[in-house]
Length: 217
Image (cartoon, rainbow, N blue to C red; front, side, top):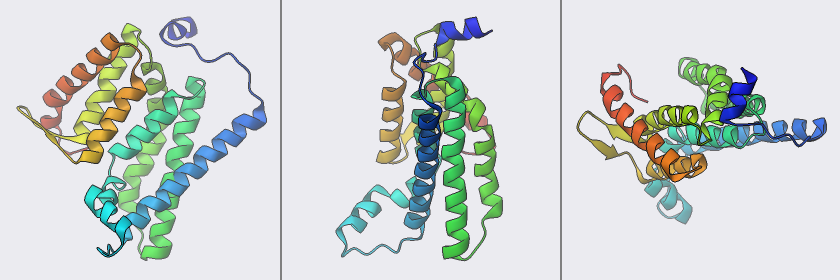
């Protein structure tokens, strides 16, 4: 099994000290926590048109962007695929989302004065599933045929979450979400044929499946 997986993508062989690996994991956890606090801060921010950066937040609708799924999918995808190995991808993706969830949840309880436990269960469930998903994403950054199938699945999810999708249309769901989709394309790119098939296959799959789902991403 290991030999077959290595044909799709091989982990980096260069050894790094245990201390550096632990430090990197802690930094990813801190990054997730910082962005979780930032997301809830934007969600609670009372916008004032007299403050220039508030205008940017309002124009780009960053409060809703950081409360939505696409930005966290793309950030976790990026962290996973640039990890040294599938095992590191699983760990890094998990601690990033865990840091975000815990910080977001704690900030809401302490500063917003309520406990969104039911809402947070959705995010904690995604966090629990993130190690397996991160491993799949890690193997998806390859030009191997199996990786292209994974790419199509990744871009199907991203299409459904970044755009408004129906059987006969795909509509913009905000400039930032469109930019996030473009970032994912850049992150996953290996060869023109690989990314073209992956993106087109993902879009086609999203158009076919998304209207049948009883929920929206």
